[in-house]
Amino acid sequence: MADASRPEPPRPRSQADQTRHQRNLAQLAADLADALERLDRAEARLQLLQERLRRYEEARPLGPEEHRRWGYRGLGSLFGRAS
Image 1: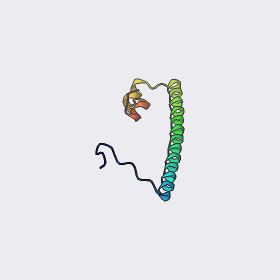
Image 2: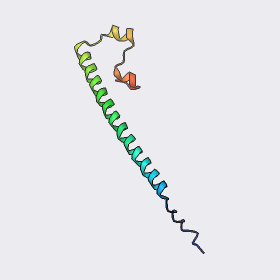
Image 3: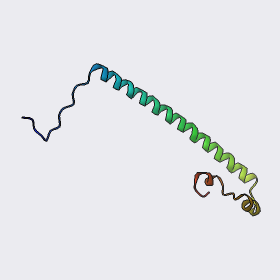
Image 4: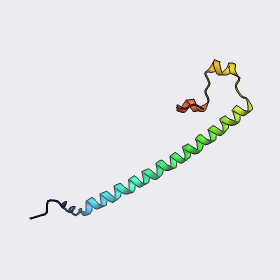
């Protein structure tokens, strides 16, 4: 009689199941690597744009009238946070 507290050992996978599992894992790893690379490029682009905006704002700061007219709150307003 089997001990009820011990889980059943996993059944051995067939060769086809093992091959499919390995292929799925390889595809997931490739997808993850691609997503991380795209994220790195997007973060680099965001940093570049933030630096360009900072330089622009330093070269030509908006006056109080322009702030009121345009409702300008800086780049942070695009991302839901105050700048």
